Length: 115
Length: 112
Image (cartoon, rainbow over all chains, first blue to last red; front, side, top):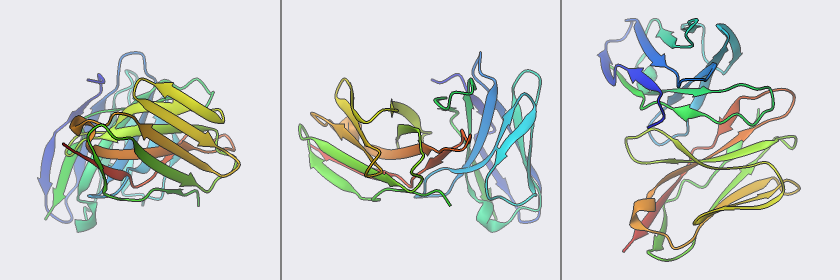
């Protein structure tokens, strides 16, 4: 158990809909990262939030957006869902100290299916 | 484009053997290297990290880093069926980027 919780665990949506995924970071952590993991692939970085600001973004379109709240919890929003958005969405929290050795602690993920 | 390459496997080893998992990376300035284990249907779990050239041992796990050749490996001694999982290599690059790039993972099967 990492102390990182995600909700919901599973979600089924139809193409064109919007979805919000939620993450509570581990106590004492100040950074949240979101990853998309397709079946048989490694996690692909979506974006990272530090002190409520986006701190880096991967190669994902603007319809992927996020928020980080003062308590360091976070949301991932995806608009205009496409079939290819079907994947496991992972939230990872870490303690950013500016030293490059921060370790990621993952939540159990949200399995999103787009029909 | 920073790349992290892993053989997807599966790598099959008998129980008690040494499993050797390899990872190469393209960013020569990479500083931090991580190995995560992911059981089927579960999320990744950090098992090893290494920053300096050479070997780092933790129980049955040994991480090996060779920055000149740009590869990092994970050795699992006395492999157990419970070690059967996908092993993900993650690399943090240079230039102030603290975002790790993951490989696609290597599937390990330890058979009795």
